[in-house]
Length: 468
Image (cartoon, rainbow, N blue to C red; front, side, top):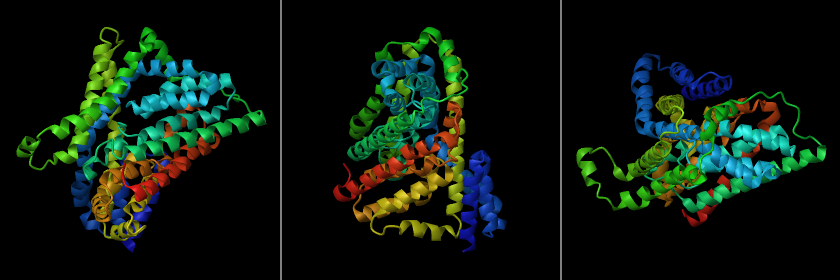
């Protein structure tokens, strides 16, 4: 019991201190050490750190470094080439300020589904959203929720083929790919989009009845505005050329997932690397190929028009390290916790939440851990690192496909991850120059409330009809 209490104390402190703004790069090893000390394993402290924490951290980095690196690079190339600006401006011109909320949501969703980083999207879209909301006299406090709906929900967790890291994490555990359970993912995505828009539009209507308007805000020149001006002619490029890299991310991924790798004899890989299971890795390999092709296409298509290609590449590459090592540190923390005696009680409690239906148990575990860490990728990684093998076994025993387990895991991780201490939410509010008090309740509604409804619907349909 003492070891279990030690785990709970360390988890609560991790959540509280992360909310206070302390980096998890430091918090994760410190809270893991605290759990070890409180559980009475003081003499094993150093071996646990070097063999358990660092092994799990390095293993995660080894497996997912290419996805983080290429994703960050692709996002920076899209931003600095002017492609992201072209796409978002085109949507604005078609829908206009009369549909300001829908315009912002769609612009964010197109960019994130195409592989552009959430943070790049937030910086790029905020100046546009600010102008649209002011022109339409919609409260500025609804801007963060609109950006969050388009960036942090259905395009991150539900839509099949999304290159978001969350959608890649379950692949080596379940032997799936980013297109897992496409039908259910689309249904879940429609519920998230429709429900989120209904909420935001109802808040807009309520504010209009009260005569609230945009509000009075002291606003300077946003970083994205300055970047736009610096890019000059590059901020506008042909729409077809701007959209092409996004189509390549999804299209090349699908091509290698369903046509190339399944028709290849990969026995030569096993002969050279006997520990590699190609059936569990082709999903990651396909995503890597797609991102490389998209990045190369962007670079080549804009040769001679880059303001400073070297600076863009360096900025993109350097930008991947903090998100990767934040998540990897949380994985190391999870591995230490899983090795403590008290974790057996927690594991059994979670696994027995819904005997006979591992989908419900998995959804609870992902939501809880994502909420504690304030990170969908962190919570998902910890849960699969500690319970992935158990869930796969339970799914096989219950006749549930790994593809359905994959989709439920990713959607569940995108539920409580946006609690107030979530780093992405704190950053988004900072970009918009707003506070939790002003905007958080609407963010919570579209990133936690509505996605929970979608998750319940997907679990119910999957239980009745299986994966489709």
